[in-house]
Image (tube, rainbow, N blue to C red; front, side):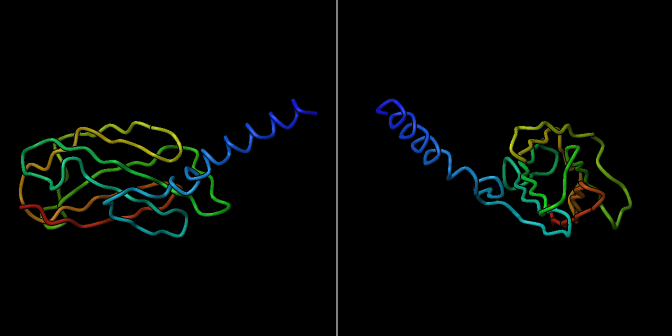
Length: 132
């Protein structure tokens, strides 16, 4: 009986330790949040702010809505709508687990209005940023 109580105490302690992580998946400090019908997404640049001609990375958290299954990692790209062109670089996306991703290899080669484009679960979310 005492062995079972000890095992139960350890299980409860483990749940208490990991319970805060359950809500953590959709949180990303200092991030911009985008809401879609299939998923929500939060992202931030590293470093911030973005500097013209300097590489940066994106930290991304994707949270599917109930009943939505994301079978592939999100895709991310950027382009300049007014100039009708994108970046000269193709960033790479790396899964970190629990809906978290890191995308590296970003570089905005000119100042102006850029648009991040995120795609997952057949839905596309965009966010415009002004880079000087």
